[in-house]
Amino acid sequence: MNLEKRFSAYGDVKCNESLAKHTTFQVGGDCQYFVYPKNELCLMEILKICQNEDLPYKIFGRGSNLLCSDDPYVGVVICLERYMSDFYFDEDGICVAQAGCSIILLAHEAMKRSLSGLEFASGIPGTLGGAIYMNAGAYRSAISDVLQSVFVLKDGECVWMDSEQLDYDYRHSRFQRENDWIILGGRLQLQPGNQKEISDCMDSRRKRRMSTQPLDKPCAGSMFRNPENAQAWELIEKIGYRGKRIGGAMVSEKHANFIVNEDHAKAADIAALVKEIQRKVREQFGIELRTEVERFNWKI
Image (cartoon, rainbow, N blue to C red; front, side):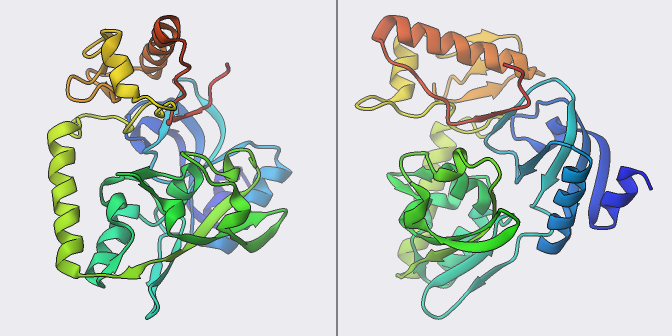
């Protein structure tokens, strides 16, 4: 039995699938197998096949914080968004959700239940798993502020880990160095609130995002983390790179910490622009800009 048929026993499979279809940057080469597991049990069987066949794999959500290279990926992309996206709320303000669940959806569902704590996430176009991995945040709030525990597949077992064990900091978590751990879900503690106030807050922030961010063009959100005592966008403006373009990639005219796919960009165009910005900021200010966006399938 070939690998496509073996994987298809446990999920939906696409062969030689363009990763540009699965990232918000709309760039990336083809991957050998793109698989949507039906549930956690199927995920474990897919991982077992990868291990037995010595195939590398990568866990995907919505691809909203990834810069995939233009090169083919000889391996398996396992996407949790299609099937592993259920969520549940209880009467004590606890939300339990699978890793593939949209964080925007969770924010709106919390608002419908008059629960506060996820207003910051109402404009983050990723999954809960991705948010937990990156400690995604906005408006001086982050997922770690409401995260109680994480359901993790590690060492062949599914376990709950308290958030205190996971080394949370600004755009950082322990998952970023534990490459073999897979986030399966999370438990969030939300607080009772006024539904209208929560809704008004989300609407206000939506209008602000629309007016200040290039949401009409393919991008991956903020490209760089804010260094200590500085704003990344201000540093990029000071080196004169607002509107700077390499190939089809461009620093947004609307927000200098966004790089957009302006015109059929290649991943290499985006990477070159990132590298050039980092070099110019380092030379002019002695500051190392670190990316928020994760690189995938790059040789260097």
